[in-house]
Image 1 (cartoon, one colour):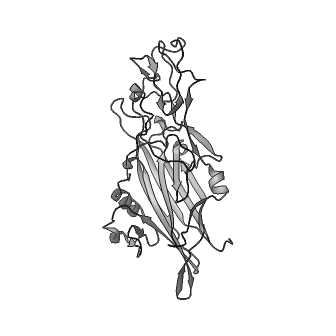
Image 2 (cartoon, rainbow, N blue to C red):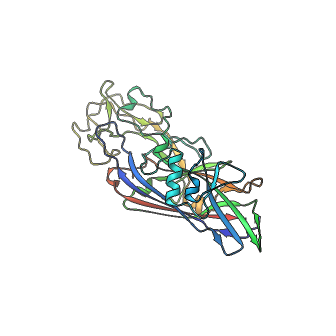
Length: 343
């Protein structure tokens, strides 16, 4: 198919990360709060092409007209935003649909393969693997993350005539990601259309995997958590196999000191530790910048029958990323997504 015009809408998301105050050991190591802002710029290129962006809602947006949103003539679930998704529109949309607006909690995709089943899961709690049952999926609450069901349409203008473009692909042509500290490394975006889905890690150039299981220090005592009844270290998250050593740890420490990082604690003397060579953790696959942006991966396509392209976005912070630790509290990150629509 020959490309004719490229539309360059800009979707900008700025999120402020703040640490949730915790009073006790039941809070996970990646529970944070954030303020979410979203704006959209760029509605046309020249005078011959038009581009519009909208939101698909699972509930009726009864106050849509107050935000200059117009319901689609053929689909009552679609609301066109007439030139942009402002901060107020985004907040109204997210609130109406039950998603996070000004506070989100760190979550995890858990074990995942590209084009596989995607489910955001909540954080593990201290000593939750008491009966080794955390491997079952426990879905994150909608208020834990941000979710947008975007719709796009493009039109040609010739004199007084406007005609819909009914074929073409949407690609992510550029992304700008910045932050104070390393919190940006924890950002993940799940893209989903009618035919495929994938996790995008914008902080990495190459494709990779997140390990979504392991030892943690959730009670922040400087020691990897262990079960006081079985005297074994607790393995959080999802694993392929777990194997413990035949004898207790003798080269660890008796009393630990927490350094703000639940990943880098010490083994406790007198506790059965895991056999690191035999224990296997599950992983979550993601695509990096080169696969998605450099290689112009199609993230959605215009439906010939409706002349609309649909794209679902889950924007979240992956708690198993090693950058998601206490020292990142109060750090800001900004995320700008630039799409192209090729006819």
